[in-house]
Length: 426
Image (tube, rainbow, N blue to C red; front, side):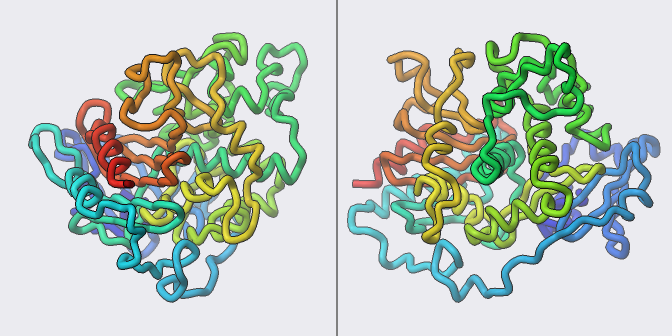
């Protein structure tokens, strides 16, 4: 609620109606305090909790540390560029020309594909699409937004934030000449006789750390405890014991990503860390409204908490479509992107790279791909409730879909949607 009101600019009533679980909210009381920028809640009058909003840092849940301790924290932040993006051409700005769409685009077919995601065919399985943006060959060729979700709305990316951390780590690796195949610099594993000492940065990036961490959101799992019951999420994740030999088993874990976020903090230093994503990535892409949230210890919650407009998310995808070259600057090296889209041999199911999902199949059977109707070179950022940034190099496409799909598996018909968008490129 705190993030939705103070970052996304949602009305409290709309936030509760659209995003919070209705079966539980009837037993809860939530109060917004606009004076001290906070949200407080209780459940049956018990289980009190509070989150505070701090400009540049987002909303932070108060736990383990006191509110006074958290509010007393001082970080070096940076301000967004002092420009009016409406006057600057896409992609650095928001000035677009929808009337100069390339002649090989079938506009009718493209619009049919997009419109289909805003039509609710089953009231019991709402797809709740909020925004769609399509970029072809660097040009923004189509977009659509749901009512009450204008173009300037900021959307929670959930686990798409993991892909942001991947990009930030790529920048750090380039600047610091890091060996990602060496032991990850994690204080909890420093001792050479600790079996976790052999976990590499690459293992963390590819979700093959071997840590015994349960990623489950239907029970009191490790992921939920980390996100809602700890002040230092990376420390919590790093405390887990080893379950498998590092590099041998794929196990998707938000804990791995939050450890990576803290490693970035340790490497770039306290004076640079909180401005680093903005100076080195977001503002260079024109993602001027983007924000990442920190936990109570001040580390970015790289697994889950970032907000940006649909166009911001499209800009992020465009960075990868252009092989790291953006606004005449090589922000990510081609080598890093090539490594990003190679799957670990440990992943025997759907393929996974450096915090991105891959659509290349395990075998020649196309049905084993997550999206059989999309090319095998497609890779994508993916978040809870159907957040996606699809990058398809062979089709020169970046496709963003944001929403709150409650259907099983957050399935909003993505495969058919992708098929039709691709078919519109003649």
